[in-house]
Image (cartoon, rainbow, N blue to C red; front, side):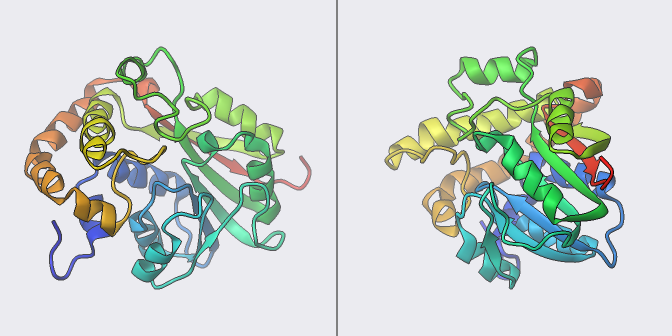
Length: 270
């Protein structure tokens, strides 16, 4: 499950196809952050591995989580405090950050505008915001299959299915931010691999252990991982095959990304 030298968070990350694609896509759009003050905000589905790799990328990072889950365990792993960041009021001063990254937060909140306005408030002029969300397009094959199997937004702890790129751009514009770029990751074949894993965790493994909490679609703590250790070891053995399946995403067009990213900047004159 883990080695004596590798934290379990990194071991899991190296077996997560979608999180690796997410990291690659975000770093490509982010570019260099050397000498910059940066903030990463997540929402529960995070064990600290993404934080670790962002820190390695450069810049000075502050960590926050809207759901306030696993803060102590993430803090111990990172050796840095991870703060609770309420979606309507960030505990940071105005114009404090050069870069704010929001990973899979907006689909969890009832109203996206308070969060986006707070992101704008804490950005310096010309600072940039990167936002990732699921693609909520009901025409995507993977979405149709998820919902048919009962993996609805509620199971993921979402208040909405997600956003298309255009919908996310509209949301950031409404918050007085200026979209400058977009991207995405995880097409049909990666989503099917992830769906199989999440379905097994929610409807098979967790039900045997008394059921999964809403929004918990994979282990996010050492305790949860220990509970399902045997299943995780089996998944690790199958990982090379799953990685090959994921590579078939290259056959699908970019417009079928099941997760989208929008980059926006803060302009005083907007």
